[in-house]
Amino acid sequence: MDNLLFFRQLDTMKDEDYIKSFISYLISPVITGIKPSSIINIFNNTRILLPLWHDISLQFMSDLKLDYMPIKQYNDSETILIYDKCSITNILKCQEIRSLLKTYGYTDLDNTDVVLNYLYTRLKSNNFPHEVGVFLGIPLHDVEGFIKRSDPCLLSGYWKVYSEANYAKEIFELYDKSKDLVANCILNGNDIRSLTKNFTPLFLN
Image (tube, rainbow, N blue to C red):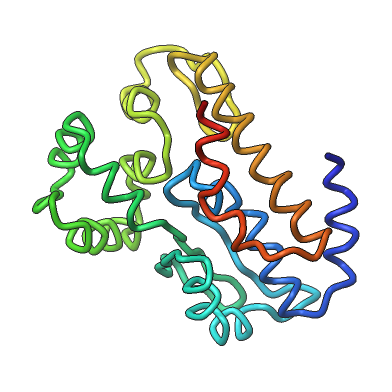
Protein backbone atom coordinates (compact mmCIF):
# COMPACT_ATOMS: atom_id res chain seq x y z
CA MET A 1 0.00 0.00 0.00
CA ASP A 2 0.98 3.64 -0.28
CA ASN A 3 1.95 4.49 3.29
CA LEU A 4 1.88 8.19 2.40
CA LEU A 5 -1.87 8.06 3.02
CA PHE A 6 -1.22 6.65 6.49
CA PHE A 7 1.23 9.43 7.37
CA ARG A 8 -1.17 12.08 6.10
CA GLN A 9 -3.86 10.64 8.36
CA LEU A 10 -1.35 10.51 11.20
CA ASP A 11 -0.78 14.26 10.99
CA THR A 12 -4.49 14.92 11.57
CA MET A 13 -4.70 12.89 14.79
CA LYS A 14 -4.78 14.16 18.34
CA ASP A 15 -1.60 13.53 20.29
CA GLU A 16 -2.64 10.32 22.06
CA ASP A 17 -3.99 8.71 18.89
CA TYR A 18 -0.92 9.96 17.05
CA ILE A 19 1.63 8.41 19.40
CA LYS A 20 -0.25 5.10 19.65
CA SER A 21 -0.62 4.85 15.89
CA PHE A 22 2.94 5.88 15.13
CA ILE A 23 4.48 3.49 17.65
CA SER A 24 2.21 0.68 16.44
CA TYR A 25 3.44 1.28 12.92
CA LEU A 26 7.09 1.27 14.02
CA ILE A 27 6.73 -1.98 15.97
CA SER A 28 4.28 -3.63 13.56
CA PRO A 29 6.44 -6.77 13.04
CA VAL A 30 6.44 -7.24 16.82
CA ILE A 31 2.66 -6.85 16.98
CA THR A 32 2.08 -9.40 14.21
CA GLY A 33 4.52 -11.85 15.81
CA ILE A 34 7.19 -11.82 13.13
CA LYS A 35 9.79 -10.03 15.26
CA PRO A 36 10.53 -10.52 18.98
CA SER A 37 11.43 -6.90 19.73
CA SER A 38 12.16 -3.47 18.30
CA ILE A 39 14.17 -0.47 19.44
CA ILE A 40 12.47 2.86 18.81
CA ASN A 41 13.02 6.51 19.66
CA ILE A 42 10.33 8.79 21.06
CA PHE A 43 11.08 12.49 20.97
CA ASN A 44 9.58 15.93 21.33
CA ASN A 45 9.49 18.04 18.19
CA THR A 46 6.36 19.78 16.92
CA ARG A 47 4.45 17.57 19.35
CA ILE A 48 5.41 17.09 22.99
CA LEU A 49 5.20 13.32 23.13
CA LEU A 50 7.50 12.17 25.93
CA PRO A 51 5.24 13.13 28.88
CA LEU A 52 2.30 11.57 27.07
CA TRP A 53 4.26 8.37 26.48
CA HIS A 54 5.08 8.17 30.18
CA ASP A 55 1.38 8.54 30.98
CA ILE A 56 0.04 5.92 28.57
CA SER A 57 2.92 3.46 28.13
CA LEU A 58 1.98 0.86 30.75
CA GLN A 59 -1.64 0.51 29.66
CA PHE A 60 -0.82 0.79 25.95
CA MET A 61 1.80 -1.97 26.11
CA SER A 62 -0.49 -4.10 28.27
CA ASP A 63 -3.26 -3.78 25.68
CA LEU A 64 -0.86 -5.06 23.02
CA LYS A 65 0.40 -7.82 25.34
CA LEU A 66 3.93 -6.43 25.06
CA ASP A 67 6.55 -5.15 27.48
CA TYR A 68 9.14 -2.41 27.23
CA MET A 69 12.28 -1.09 28.85
CA PRO A 70 13.74 2.42 28.57
CA ILE A 71 17.34 2.33 27.36
CA LYS A 72 18.58 5.89 27.00
CA GLN A 73 16.94 9.06 28.27
CA TYR A 74 17.75 12.58 27.18
CA ASN A 75 16.04 15.94 27.63
CA ASP A 76 13.84 15.63 24.55
CA SER A 77 14.06 11.97 23.56
CA GLU A 78 14.01 8.44 24.89
CA THR A 79 15.21 5.18 23.35
CA ILE A 80 13.03 2.20 24.19
CA LEU A 81 13.12 -1.55 23.65
CA ILE A 82 9.62 -2.95 23.07
CA TYR A 83 9.44 -6.73 23.23
CA ASP A 84 7.26 -9.81 23.33
CA LYS A 85 8.43 -11.75 26.34
CA CYS A 86 7.17 -15.10 25.03
CA SER A 87 9.12 -14.60 21.82
CA ILE A 88 12.27 -13.79 23.80
CA THR A 89 11.77 -16.99 25.80
CA ASN A 90 11.54 -18.97 22.56
CA ILE A 91 14.75 -17.39 21.26
CA LEU A 92 16.56 -18.53 24.40
CA LYS A 93 15.75 -22.16 23.60
CA CYS A 94 18.19 -22.11 20.66
CA GLN A 95 21.47 -23.70 21.75
CA GLU A 96 23.56 -21.69 19.27
CA ILE A 97 22.10 -18.43 20.59
CA ARG A 98 22.68 -19.56 24.17
CA SER A 99 26.32 -20.23 23.34
CA LEU A 100 26.73 -16.74 21.86
CA LEU A 101 25.08 -15.05 24.83
CA LYS A 102 27.27 -16.93 27.30
CA THR A 103 30.36 -15.40 25.67
CA TYR A 104 28.96 -11.96 26.60
CA GLY A 105 28.33 -12.86 30.23
CA TYR A 106 24.69 -13.93 30.16
CA THR A 107 23.79 -16.50 32.81
CA ASP A 108 20.67 -18.42 33.87
CA LEU A 109 19.45 -18.57 30.29
CA ASP A 110 16.36 -20.53 31.34
CA ASN A 111 15.15 -17.46 33.23
CA THR A 112 13.93 -14.83 30.76
CA ASP A 113 13.71 -12.11 33.41
CA VAL A 114 17.34 -12.60 34.40
CA VAL A 115 18.40 -12.45 30.75
CA LEU A 116 16.37 -9.29 30.13
CA ASN A 117 17.82 -7.63 33.21
CA TYR A 118 21.35 -8.34 31.98
CA LEU A 119 20.42 -7.14 28.50
CA TYR A 120 19.20 -3.93 30.12
CA THR A 121 22.57 -3.34 31.79
CA ARG A 122 24.31 -4.04 28.48
CA LEU A 123 22.07 -1.63 26.59
CA LYS A 124 22.66 1.08 29.20
CA SER A 125 26.42 0.89 28.69
CA ASN A 126 28.25 3.29 26.41
CA ASN A 127 29.19 0.53 23.95
CA PHE A 128 26.15 -0.82 22.10
CA PRO A 129 26.07 -4.63 22.54
CA HIS A 130 26.16 -6.40 19.19
CA GLU A 131 24.45 -9.51 20.57
CA VAL A 132 21.26 -7.47 20.89
CA GLY A 133 20.65 -8.49 17.27
CA VAL A 134 19.42 -11.92 18.31
CA PHE A 135 16.82 -10.29 20.57
CA LEU A 136 15.71 -8.14 17.63
CA GLY A 137 15.09 -11.22 15.49
CA ILE A 138 18.17 -10.91 13.31
CA PRO A 139 19.36 -14.38 12.21
CA LEU A 140 22.28 -15.64 14.25
CA HIS A 141 24.53 -16.04 11.20
CA ASP A 142 24.10 -12.34 10.40
CA VAL A 143 24.66 -11.27 14.01
CA GLU A 144 27.89 -13.26 14.03
CA GLY A 145 28.78 -11.94 10.58
CA PHE A 146 28.41 -8.37 11.83
CA ILE A 147 30.50 -9.09 14.92
CA LYS A 148 33.33 -10.81 13.02
CA ARG A 149 33.11 -8.77 9.78
CA SER A 150 35.34 -11.30 8.04
CA ASP A 151 32.90 -11.77 5.14
CA PRO A 152 31.49 -9.11 2.80
CA CYS A 153 28.04 -7.69 3.43
CA LEU A 154 25.71 -9.10 0.76
CA LEU A 155 22.70 -6.91 1.43
CA SER A 156 21.67 -4.07 3.69
CA GLY A 157 18.02 -3.66 4.64
CA TYR A 158 16.49 -3.93 8.08
CA TRP A 159 19.89 -5.33 9.06
CA LYS A 160 23.21 -6.12 7.36
CA VAL A 161 23.10 -9.52 5.68
CA TYR A 162 26.22 -11.70 5.48
CA SER A 163 24.70 -14.97 4.26
CA GLU A 164 21.41 -16.43 3.05
CA ALA A 165 20.41 -13.20 1.31
CA ASN A 166 17.23 -14.67 -0.19
CA TYR A 167 16.01 -15.70 3.24
CA ALA A 168 16.70 -12.21 4.55
CA LYS A 169 14.73 -10.69 1.67
CA GLU A 170 11.75 -12.85 2.62
CA ILE A 171 11.90 -11.59 6.19
CA PHE A 172 12.22 -7.99 4.98
CA GLU A 173 9.03 -8.52 2.97
CA LEU A 174 7.27 -9.85 6.06
CA TYR A 175 8.26 -6.71 7.96
CA ASP A 176 6.86 -4.57 5.15
CA LYS A 177 3.63 -6.60 5.10
CA SER A 178 3.31 -6.10 8.85
CA LYS A 179 3.58 -2.33 8.39
CA ASP A 180 0.92 -2.45 5.69
CA LEU A 181 -1.40 -4.46 7.93
CA VAL A 182 -1.05 -2.06 10.84
CA ALA A 183 -1.39 1.02 8.63
CA ASN A 184 -4.53 -0.38 6.98
CA CYS A 185 -5.97 -1.34 10.34
CA ILE A 186 -5.51 2.21 11.64
CA LEU A 187 -6.82 3.83 8.46
CA ASN A 188 -9.95 1.68 8.61
CA GLY A 189 -10.54 2.52 12.27
CA ASN A 190 -10.05 -1.06 13.44
CA ASP A 191 -8.50 -2.25 16.69
CA ILE A 192 -4.78 -3.02 16.30
CA ARG A 193 -5.13 -5.74 18.90
CA SER A 194 -6.93 -7.82 16.29
CA LEU A 195 -3.56 -8.21 14.53
CA THR A 196 -1.68 -9.57 17.53
CA LYS A 197 0.06 -12.71 16.25
CA ASN A 198 -3.00 -13.64 14.17
CA PHE A 199 -1.07 -13.24 10.93
CA THR A 200 2.04 -15.16 11.89
CA PRO A 201 0.92 -18.52 10.44
CA LEU A 202 -0.14 -16.86 7.19
CA PHE A 203 3.18 -15.09 6.86
CA LEU A 204 5.28 -18.11 7.67
CA ASN A 205 3.49 -20.68 5.49
